[in-house]
Image (cartoon, rainbow, N blue to C red; front, side, top):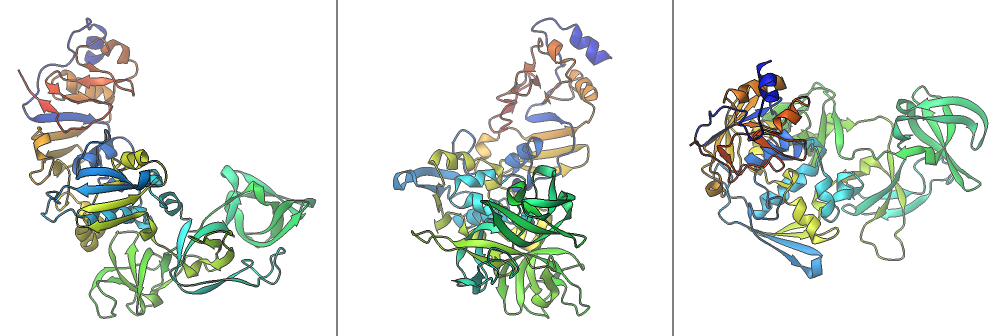
Length: 505
């Protein structure tokens, strides 16, 4: 192969790729088309790289402002206050204000958003518990019980234990949803701690907990399998599964109620029809209607309550304790999942005014500063998402905030152009960025060799040692790539296109 033989014959310091760069244009090889641009949905690697070009975060990964004007620690390190750049705008001209930032962060926590990585939210108070579904709001006043079922051996009467008013925030302590840990199986017996073995229970066969008993300090659970059989298993061999709150299934009753409407009325225009069995995430309640997000389309609207039912016919329970109750330790009680709701407004962040955001730290402020550079916390346009659902990200109508915006997108090439509305306009020195999708690394190497690409992010493993001698070799933590000498200011470890230039001789 020409590229392979050329690489093997390279003298130290010799350039591998021919000169073919064009001023202001950067051509980058990618192994596959980048199809996910929504910042919180972006996975590692190229999706995250593209998201950060299209959507500016508040800070960059070196702590420098992007959409923020300033950041300061308050309250002895317990609070971070961010002041936004007053000139920051979405690409359609709408101001990026503190309310839009807070809305974007809460949206990222919703299951309907499908965020790829919620770990950065652990830096913010309540962020980790929300990301794990362990912090919920009491949707309607309810009486907590001493056990999820009257038949539980530890509390046979399942007596009232705690009154919980609507709006109370609670932390999940336990559930009646358990599965064998780590993909394995668990042995079932006729009696706890002894008795005849009934065989091993597969991870997919656990139905529900229908009893409990403590024997010699060890807790055992009576499990019902999906086939209706039952047996005892030691609790420590099972992993707690927090069932998702606020998810309901659509039931098409043939009366036109199975639709997502623009308002909470039966005659309000339908935004999108909902198919029988579809799942929506409930955001709030109105008279006879629930405000919801359709998991399939991302559209927001209102659904008649009669058109929705629980995901499972069998009742699911959570053991909870109220949040914010001082010592002694707050009481705990079992509550039906239907009485609880997911509420991302519990995230420790609030808009003080149009440009000021107060963030309550979960640990040291430095963790918050790092989180502010993550794409999951990049502001997105509430007005566009509310009206268009997941289609807001389509190339023809996308509303961005970053230094670049998509011009054309095909399976072979994504073209980004400099955004005239970005507050980072002066730092974007490239007029055009072309991400060229070629799945064959050798074919991509040929294109670079011919001067038709400016950047290879990675190299074929068998040719990497030879290509490391080239003048245009660029080292990186991932093993290195190739960057044409005409490209200035690009690091393969950061892939930040702000400040990058292409200057042919």
